[in-house]
Image 1 (cartoon, rainbow, N blue to C red):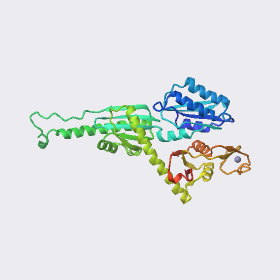
Image 2 (image 1 turned 135 degrees about the vertical axis):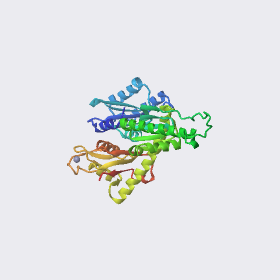
Image 3 (image 1 turned 180 degrees about the horizontal axis):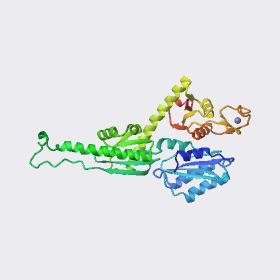
Image 4 (image 1 turned 30 degrees about the horizontal axis):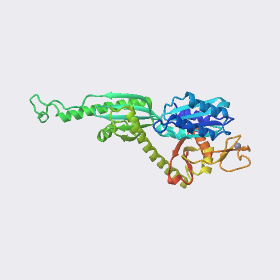
Amino acid sequence: MIDETELRNLAQFQAERPILSVYLDVDPTRHTSEEYLLSLRNMLKGVEGQAAPEDIQAVQRYFEHEYDWSGRGVAVFSGAAAGFWRVYVLPLPVASGVTVARRPYISPLAALLDTYERYAVAAVNREGVRVVLFHLGEPISEEVFEGEEVKKLKRGRGSSGGAERRGGAPSGSRHMEEVAMRNLRQAARVVEQFWRQHNPRQLILAGTEPTVSQFRDLLPKALQETVVGTMSGSPADSPHTLRERSLQVLQRVEKEREAATVEAVVTAAAKGREGVLGLDDTLSAAREGRIRTLVVLRDFHAPGYRCTSCDYLTAVEMDHCPYCGGVFADIPDAAEALVTKVVEDGGEIEVVDHHPLLEGAGIGALLRY
Ligand SMILES: [Zn+2]
C-alpha cells in the first residue's frame, strides 16, 4: 500500500528512458471493466511513439490478465528498460490519465495521501466506543470498548424514588449520568491508547452532539487538536458505514484547508516574505530547497526546462544553465517536476481543485524561514 515513505521513494526514482505512468479509474459503481479497458487502450494509443512499446504492453498485459478489479483506482508505473515496475491498487477513485516522463508521475498519489492518509474515527455513545484506523479509506485496525449498560436503576424497594432527598441511593437519572460518565472516561482512555499506538494524522469523532462534545473534553489536549470534524454514528456502526461518512467529512475538511492555504500563500507572497506565487518564483524557491507547502491547481501544467547536469528547473528558455553551464532539456510539465522535487525534499503538496485567488498564477508555495 502506498504511504508517504513509498511516495518519496517513487519521487526519487529517475531513469535514462521515459517511465510510463498510468492512472485508471476503476470504480465498479460507475462503469464495467470492459469500458475501463477500452478507455485504457485509447489512453495508451495516445502515447504510442512517446512511451516504450514494452511499457505499453506491460501495462496492457497487467490490466487484461493479472489485475483482479479490486479497489476503485489503480496507479501503474512502468520503466521496462530500467527494470522498474510498480502497481498500487487504491481504495479510492483517481482521475484516469497517462504520462510519459523520466520520473514517475506522482501528483495524483500525492493529492490522495494529502487528504486520506492515516486517519481515525472514534464512534462514541454513553456506553462505549469503536475506534477505527483508516488508510486511504481502508480500515486497517480497530478497537471496541463496551462499558456498563446505562439504564435506570429499578425503583422500588418501597422507596418510590424518594431516596435521594433522604440522602440514600442516587436517583435513577443521576445514577445513569454517573455510569455514562464512567464509560466516557474509559472510552477516552481507550482512544488515547489507540492514538499512541497508531499515531493517525487526523481524528474524526462520531456520535450525537452532546455526547461527542462531552467526550472531546475528556481527551488530552494534544489529541483534541487532531480532531478535524464530527459526524453522526455510534459504536454499533460497521467500519464500512463509518468509512463512507468519514470520506465526506475529509473532503469537506480538505476544501477548507485548501482555501486557507491558498489565502496564506497569497498573503505571504504579497508581503514578499515566506510565500511565492507563479511558476518562475516557485521554481526558484524549489531550487533553494525552501518550499514547505506547494500549492498547485489540479489542472495546472506548463512546459519548462531542466538542466541535464544539475537538475535546475526553469520556465525561461536559456542557452546554458546559469549555475553549472550545462545544457537544458525540455520537460513537458514543470508543475509535475516541482511536485516531484518538493516531495523529495520532504515538503507538503496541496492540490487545489478551484480557487479564485490561484486561477491566474496556477501555482505557489509557502516557504521555510
Ligand atoms: Zn545546471
